[in-house]
Length: 326
View 1: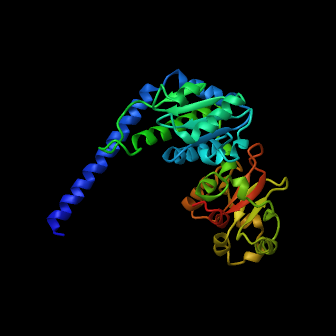
View 2: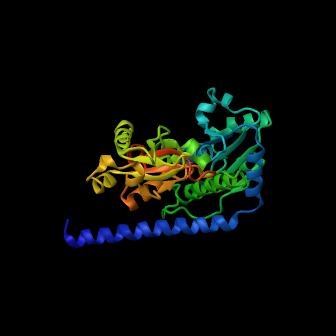
View 3: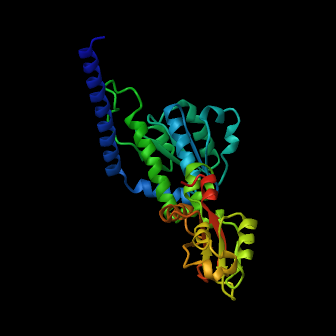
């Protein structure tokens, strides 16, 4: 292959990629403009369900349905995917009264969905249909039909599900976000369903990582006791409190080096650095890491919001790193 041929193919491929993305972006704009009262009706129907959202589709629509069910479930709307072919062989038992079915078929005539449609009609299970054909079986049988606008697929042949699946995916996201906003779904709720991985780490709070076994010593205590407390607790620091137990300062390795001469003749109050950096227990662990990195320190005392001088715990940067907070 010559250099000129390679250059031609790269240019050609790039043009195709841009054309496909432009067509799908245009399709999403048309979809947004086409949303009407049916969208609100679908949201209300899901909110009124006592059970779960049962999402189903075949082929490419099935892949979108799986993602849609996962997005619902992770944002406060109980949902799961039921494969339409498996439903015909026993999995219809997963679809019960109190549920709401959300079925996806661009043609609205997918044969594998017939048994699920019949099941929902037989037991009075409300159904939302996502389809591109307003006169299809799925649209006619659904309590709410969400119609995809008639836009061409991204491929020039018009036979590969591309813009249609992209629109369906976006429509599912729109439903999920509308539901979570109505339920006032917060980052704290989100973390309940995402305890692992990067998302879980990003949403960890300081209280999730802090230690309650605090290295503390009274400001009148001799430095010999302070050194023992630093060694015993293993954080490399000790907090210095007044007679009421309120945090006055902190002693670090740097403080020890600065007072090396005659250190054991001094009290903790003589050596401490006043006004140490602290953090709220409800602050995100990411904020604590950012503060420690900015101030080039390794520990933060955690202070009660209602009693800002009362230490509740201590968080070490190693705890944050082990939890994946960076």
